[in-house]
Each structure stands twice: as structure tokens, then as C-alpha cells.
Amino acid sequence: MSLPSHVVHSFVDACGKPSVLTDPSECWTYGFDNSRQHARPDLVVLPQDAEQIQACVRLCRQFHLPLTTRGRGTNTTGAAVPLQSGVVLSTERMDRVLEMDAANRNMRVEPGVLNSTVQQQALEHGLFWPPDPGSADYCTVGGNLACNAAGPRAIKYGTCRENTLEVHAVTGAGDMIRTGSATTKGVVGLDLTRLLVGSEGILAVITEARLKLSAIAERTDTIRASYIDTQSAIDAVVCILAQSALPCALEFMDEGSLDLTRKQEAITLPDHAKAVLIIEVDGLVQTVDASVAAVQKAAKNPGCIDLLNASDPRQRAELWQARKVLSQALRSFAPSKINEDVVVPVSRLPTLLQELELLATKFSIPIFNFGHAGNGNIHVNLLYDESDPHQAASARDCLDEVFDLVLRLDGSLSGEHGVGISKRNWVDRELGPEVLGLMRQVKRQFDPDGILNPDKVLPGPTSV
Image 1 (cartoon, helix red, strand yellow):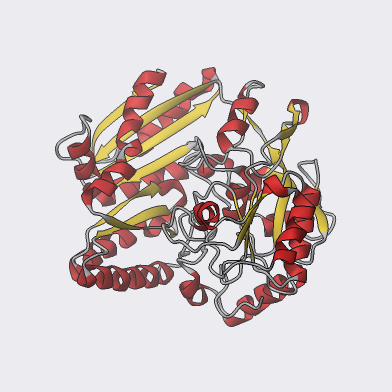
Image 2 (cartoon, one colour; image 1 turned 90 degrees about the vertical axis):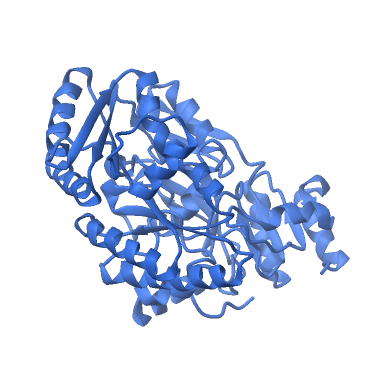
């Protein structure tokens, strides 16, 4: 559906003709994200500053148009898909680093800056921003903040919420707000920064953020530990987390993932290994050896059949290779994939993985599991053929039971991918009616007309 000409002209007047797309073929590109879901927007706006974003929000409110904000579309849950069409606001042209404050270890950026750009500029000052999702080369900081994206380093350095000091945003009411401060401590008022981070664009459009940076370790070692079974690997995870030398990454791969990896790449893994941990330890040159020894001691239990350590960058890359190629290997196994990033208490990982094996058998759906074991955050991959009605139905029924299993284990439906469309219908299983009621009140306070990213995150109808 095309918008009335006076509506289009209003957006052109606010942002300039080169920043407003109305041609259906151009708008089509902005209707999808990495969830592979799609809905074509009626109009796309490419603002270049906060004032243009504010003007866009106010126009959407005036004309009762849904507004979906997106970065580079790497989200896997459909959060950037404009379900009700309307307007898509892409931050891709707001890609400047506004300030590099190395002395205070922070950086001020626009939302369209790539994660990799932040890392490159921080590196010049011996610093880095801890969130490191797998799509870091092409995902934006705004998208990272929207989903509270994390990655392997979260075990030691935290997620976006722990590494964002200040946010500037435009609410659904069209008001510009600033939350947080340039300091690492501060308790004045409620913590709205942490509320906006992870809100998936349903409360406000982020126009600027001050990121908290960390110093790059002098040395990083990578350890790969192989085990005869999953239980031994998870026992090692618990022991590693119980000692004081906290690793900066602690990744897990199950038997199916290892078998698939062996077929895809010339990667040397012990023949009898049914589970692998990839562990990174960082710190000062003079302390890393002691930390590595402590981690290896914790990792080496009766079920450990192989333990390799490397500090040389090339050798470290080789140890990581099995994990790096896995996503592509999964795509070669079956034409369709459901990838859920569930999280449970670490001590309950063995139960989760054992029950997932039973579900795979029950529904005849291959399930491959890997991910951030140090946080209990496992990527559960259901492989099937969407063109086969029976397999498609089985996969959806299996996913339903996967979520029930996670909640029985006191877990959460999402560790870092967000909710978007894909998990929205299950949210009320995790959150009670009272909590959901409070969240809807917060949504109305920020976005009184319900124009921001409608039909996402919170179950139930959304008004526009």
C-alpha cells in the first residue's frame, strides 16, 4: 500500500529527498532481517542526525504509522521486520564515532556504527568494547544495544548492559531523552539506560550511545579440552567457574556438532571426543601462565581425553576453527534451521542436553547444541526441511517442548538474540501477568500510541 503524497512529502521535508525511499523495489530490501521473515514497508527513511529521527517519530505519531528501526538486519528473531508495513527507519547513515575518550575509557558513537569499527578505533588506544557477537564485522552498535547482544566474552566482561554508560534516544512520544552519564558510577534516578538496552526498539529509537571500553589484555591463551561425554565437559565447566582464574570465553560443542565439523573441515579432533570446550584465558603476561594452569587443572577430570593450549595467534586460530565453521556446517546439513539461544543455570546444562537428545528422538528432528557454556547460554539448532509439511510441523512442536524444558530448568527463552517475533508467543510462559502488565505500562509511558515496533517482544495486541 502506498502512502498519501502529503505524508511522503512531510518525510521528504523533514529529512530531504535523498533520505526517503518510496519505490517498492527499494523498500523491499528493508523488509527482512536474518530471521528470513519479510514484510515490505511503505516507506524507508535514512536519517543523518538525531533531529531527523525525532521528526520521523513525530510524523509517524501524527499520521498513525508504525515505525520499525533497523541497523544492518542481522537480528535472528524478526525484530527488524515491519509486520504492519508503515515506515522503516534505518540508521545506516548515522555511522560516526563522535568522540574517543581514551583517558576515561569510553567512546561516543552513533547507532549505525559497526561493531568492528568500534573495535578497530578502540584498538588504536589499547582498548576494546566487550560485546563481540558472531556478526561483529557487519552488525551495528544500535542493533547490539537493541538486543543486548553479547558473545563469548560476556562470561568475564559482561553484555551491552554492563558496557553502556549513556544513551540518547527519541521516545515514541517524540521526546529526546538522555539516560545515564559519562561516569562509571552513578545512582541518581532510575536506571533507564539498562531499560532501553535490550528493549528491541519498542520504547525509543537510540540516536547516540557512550560505550564503556576495557583494556586489551597483554596476553591471551586458548585451551581446547576434549571429553568422552557431555557430563564430563559440563562437570569441567562447573569446576572452572568455581576457581578464581575466570576465563574470558568458555564455549561448548556437543557430539553432533563435532561430527558435523569433522565432515566439513580438515580439523583434527580426538576420534572418541563427544564434547569439546574452547576456553580463553587473558591477563598480564606474568600472570597468564598461572591462570592457564589453574583452568587446566579444573578442566582435567577423568573424562578429559585431550587438552591443548596455545598462545601463538596462528595456533589459537586453529583451535577456534572447529567452532568458527560450525554455523556454515549446519546450513549444509539441512535446508532449514531453527536456532534458539536458550539459557539455563550452568549446573543444569547436563539435564538440558540430555533432555534435548530425547526430544530429537521423539520428533525425529536432528538437534545440534553449542554455545556459551560459561553463561549457560546454549544455541539449540533444530535442523529440518521447511518444504516437508511433516518435518515443519514436527520442528515447531519440538521447539514448543524445548521452551517448556528450559523454563522447567529455571532458564530463560533468550540469552542474547532477543524476542522479536519468533519468541513473542512464548513470553507469557516465562513472565507472569503482573510483570507483563508492568511492562505494558512502561511501553505506554514511552510510546503512548504504540507506534514503535508494534507486535514485537510483548504478547498481546499492539495499537497503532
